[in-house]
Length: 315
Image (cartoon, rainbow, N blue to C red; front, side, top):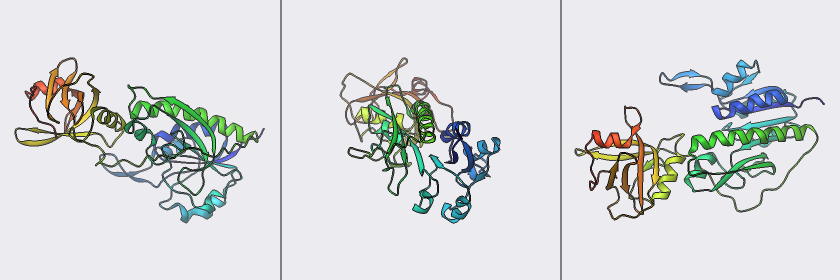
């Protein structure tokens, strides 16, 4: 059986394993990524992770600033199927019509749940107990095309965005292989999405601000772990009359109840860290990352700044 001719569309690190698998399963004709951008501390113009890996694999690469201006370049490429993983651009109808079998997206949710740019992070922030991966045919709407396959994963309390990405990438590779080999064998599955859609909007720096007076402890815990891949969750602490940002690395919901003012320290314990009163319930800060320093146990930070129970130091 002849291999499918494919074009891969992707940009960040998360898409690299999918390019590598597609290169094994198919005859990759072209890799399309976003344009080179300033990256790193020096902000030097450099290629995205997918472009770097494609060059290492000796695959031709197209990385336009604006995709629609390169329609003719893509139209000259003979390909049966397009595979999209975290590309970050919207396809116009004329692009969708180019490949024989259309374009298939690997999306990190159980569509129609969590349509949008940040499904992994939002699954945690929104308190989902289950998520997964979908492969679906791209249409003009946002993540609303018919499904090829789905793989489920039960979220654990220990998961954060980083570990959840790792687990969903593994599931996504299974889904991609099943999809590509199925299409190659003539097994074209197009199952309409059913159920009420939910959204997974892109996260902003404002989303990353943790305010203990703003929510219940479980919601803040979910927000912290959902922001593990950035933008990083930040709380504000007041020391000697000066406000300072603190990145929260690990937190845990306290099961017992206690009376206090939101932002007040309830306990400081070597084994657990700093217990802070929330609008509802309380949250242990187990590990934190002060600005300009390395991550550290919250207890060590508390000892270094003489933080004590009863003080209201957090916003």
